[in-house]
Amino acid sequence: MLRHEFQPGRLVAGTFLTVTGIIYAGDAGGAWETPWFVVIPLVIAGLCLAGAVGVLTRGIRKRRGSATPPPIDYR
Image (cartoon, rainbow, N blue to C red; front, side, top):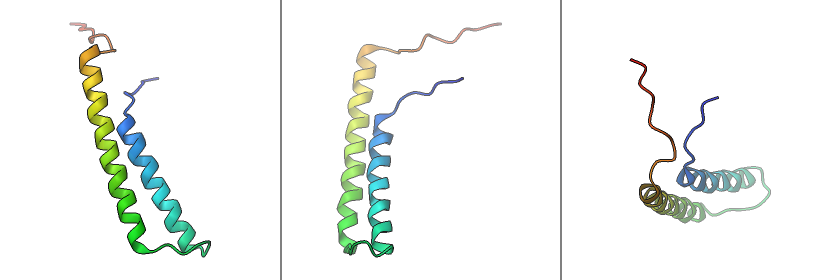
């Protein structure tokens, strides 16, 4: 099984967008009343935080070096 590189910035962005979807679903289902302007700061904050986490993670990985070995050339 191929493993992928963990990207915490995408995890943060996905979490914030999922929360936004839950807020809209609760509003559409009649569980609560949500003003339209509540969601915009939530999405913007999530994307900014995801960008910051991505930049920090990239800096840490560059300092540590690559965790994966170089590919093998079978020529």
